Length: 135
Image 1 (cartoon, helix red, strand yellow):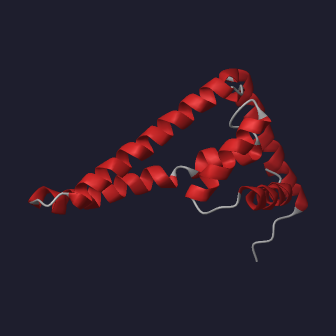
Image 2 (cartoon, rainbow, N blue to C red):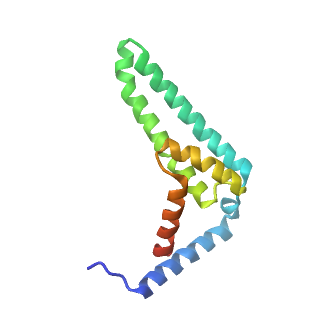
Image 3 (tube, helix red, strand yellow):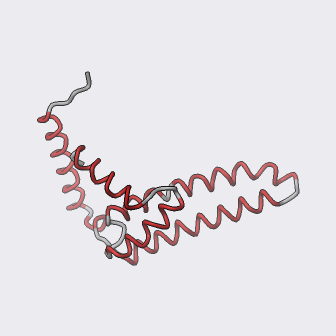
């Protein structure tokens, strides 16, 4: 039936938490929040998004045999970069992408617009998800 007992869920949750704490002790640098590092990563991501958008524009507006072959690759590259905006959006709604809460909120909304997600609605829905999955 796929039902899981409360003790199994608690055990799995405890195991996940223990693994997270072990990783945090081994690599504390991965758990440090920083506005500068977060902005650097965001700028890199947005730069890739602009680059793939430019490649897509060139491929779709160039009247040559090459344009007919390059646009599927440009669409694929742009789609991959665009879909990965979910990650900084997700971390911003958690408040973990940056050290400053105001910066998380400032970034979450525009990213949410780009991927057609409401930052406030997602935050509450996702909080409920974590509450009921013990993760």
